[in-house]
Length: 379
Image (tube, rainbow, N blue to C red):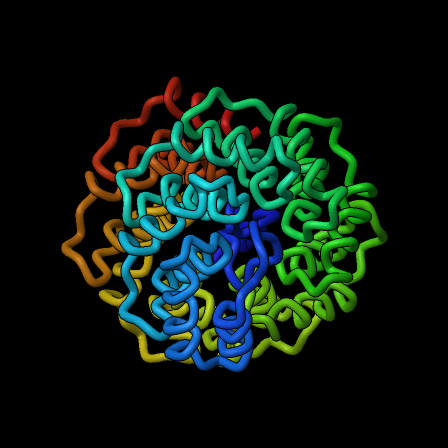
């Protein structure tokens, strides 16, 4: 199975959803009624009330009407309509709508993906001190989306949002400290920022605290405490925590080994599209651990994880081709996937290629030069 990859966050860019807190003009009765209806889960009534207020140009109602269309609450989901209503409010300077519209441009939902438009919208709201826009702008700098990657600028914007109490940004500051992006690596201070976010119930930070305890980074190694933090995040259905806790069950580390629970956790995280969980669930299916052995289902899960660039899944797929499990035995395909996995930085794949060229396997001749090349990657 291999160890689960513990990325320190699930995403840096989350759409601001829910009720607006700022707006222009005096809130009229229908907008207030819409807020009350949304809080009560009566989205049909919220839609009706927001439509009335939005038609008069009330920015808060326009933004929240966009939210209803984006989420499909009380109306058929329609990203184009969401973008249209966000734009109406954004053009009037409504900061939350600028951020929400920017996110649609970043993700290509309802509009043609345009990172430059996303950056421009985030920048307007960030300059006006809107925390979510500051966080999202930091994400663009960190990822280098439509802009030159710049960890220092990313950290600058994350910190501005974090100082306003944004738990997502606090988590991202912790991640930058943990990985040494834009700042010297500092696990102790990473823990401080993760705890700020966790104190607000932010599930990803709860997971990240668990990972630091599990690895003994910034704190004394403590698997029991790690498990407790993972469970907090699992209760909120965080897919990374589901995967991490599932791995501990599957490996019997700190918990009695229980493949059935591991499979349930991997399945829950895989259903959310989490690549490591897809790979781990595929492995359980390929091995027939707590489930009926199913190589074809395993292959499909590996391919889903590979679409997200997961190197471990590439190696698992290589093994299927090498052994002819669920697919025709194919040395060339196996070699290709071992190589892609190794080139993506997965050490076990480099070790396998070292053996291939040392022993002359998978249709390859003994080749000491290539063997040394892959051995050097393992160091």
